[in-house]
Image (cartoon, rainbow, N blue to C red; front, side, top):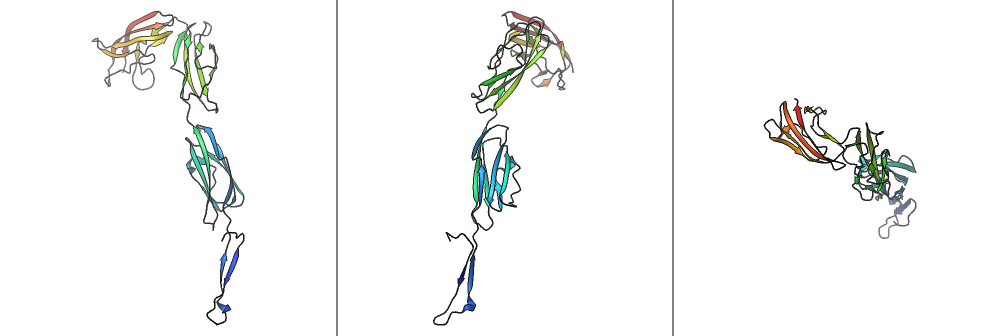
Length: 302
């Protein structure tokens, strides 16, 4: 029925042989023209950062109902009914990965549907690592080095600027003078890519008034309460830890590490140890190259 733009009624009259037409047997067929569904949508495609949202705009000019795909990551998408025309929808999409949102519009009586696709490209999270928390002494140069998961995220910003030689590079050097020591500074480093997507991390630097040294507490309580559960050396002004070793009273080695920040949780082969005295030895190199050696006793308290 191509070309029909309005409702049309057809009448069919039947007759047999030479008999006159029986106008009482007139049949009619009504053809009702139903417009094809129509909508205006925006945008066709877009890119967003992970964790951000984007509006999907649609104005339905012909139709009686509509549906969305991936509706679980949409808000304000409407109830699917077209109560009046035109109907404007401002759905908010919050995808966690690249997603196609398909809007399907139906018009009652029309066998065909209108479909339109919104393609939303999602930049995956930018993971930034500022480094492990550390401790320094006055006038000790501390080399910071931030790493990122996205090589395109190469615009850096460190805050605060306290003690830093630069704030817009991934690897500034921090030096605290004598007036700045005695507390701590938590630096925030942000890395941004050309699309404006960013990630961030923090590192806390404690500044001590003492000289470079290795401090080990006299006891620890590995009871799982989140306080003093791990026996670890506090390396102040130490650029490299050669070793930190713990022995029981029979001289057996129960723990060893050369990684600053690691410590003993009070277990041997997964078995919790009872209250007892242990011996530790530690050796490291300070920022001037001097070797620091420490030895002492520590009490495990249950």
